[in-house]
Length: 426
Image (cartoon, rainbow, N blue to C red; front, side, top):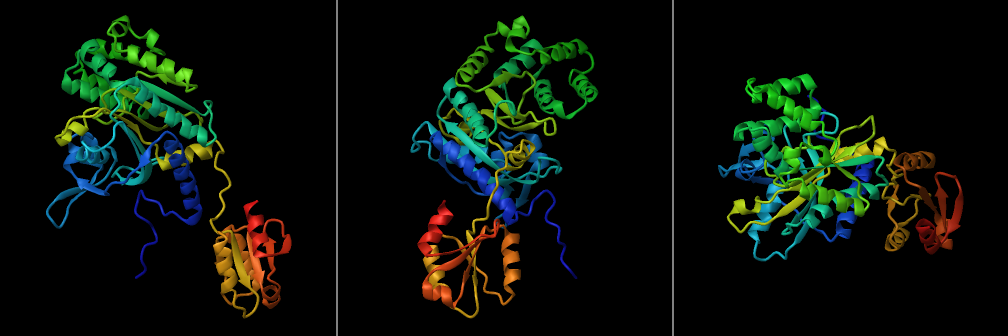
């Protein structure tokens, strides 16, 4: 019986050409966040289930986690996100960590959900978190990093939009402006988070269910509110609450730093743990018009681990949506293999000393020691994407000058190791 060639549904096989793009994205992420002073960490792939039941939300825990009982009779979960893990890690060393703590990781996660464009069951993402800073400067820094990452990839403000809201303002709207009870407010926030993924008729029907079909005037108030194009055009009752002040200051300071952002009353972010500013970054390409990633403030999560609480703000862009963004805007650069050249021995010659010398000169060398004909070896090198082949026979060994061929141009030169190194560096 032959084994099935298909991989696990919702996961990807990453071949070398895919890995080159992944490494480019990961290296760009790391370069930008380290420029802002962030340090890398990692966390276990498995976590106790309870750290997700506490704050991630019922949908994540009940519908999307890969949860099982291990051989020690412990109920564990393959991590669906990083936020509870890093909150646990910071809580474990609450007295030792220098604050504010700027931390990042690039890791893989799993969620059991329907695979679709831009969404997989196994996925990789960058996680950026700032612990111990409660002021608006921390929120600004987080959004500025998100903006800087996209610009590092070559994007400009015509290609993406940053949208902002504040969960404190949302809570006020739900409780005071619309008069919803706690259960209705939680249900409405979840519904609004899915609003862009459903027809307006379906949204209105679901909202009517939340309003118990007896308070349709509240639905009209909500729909009018969601159409407000700016904070200045929100209803007077909401503006007078004072809860728009932080958003107005945040937008003004971002603009002064050259970061373009806009208020969006429909922006919710689905996780239950958000407590303040939330934001999402949207691709403006009409072929890929969607939210790419987001984040926000989640004060209160560290305190769940029995230590003094800390303010926290963070965000997490994903690899898959980043790839779609780069491809949609033709921002993927030419990515070469890590191998600099393929060495092809001519006849029965011992090339190991030359190989060692090349590698000592920081040249990545693959040796084709098969017994195929030379033309087939060259075709294999071309197929692999390598730029050069190096021919070495008895004469070359005697002269210590070797034939380097550029596979793109067909040009050949007889060069020393030093000359080869200099040419490949240019």
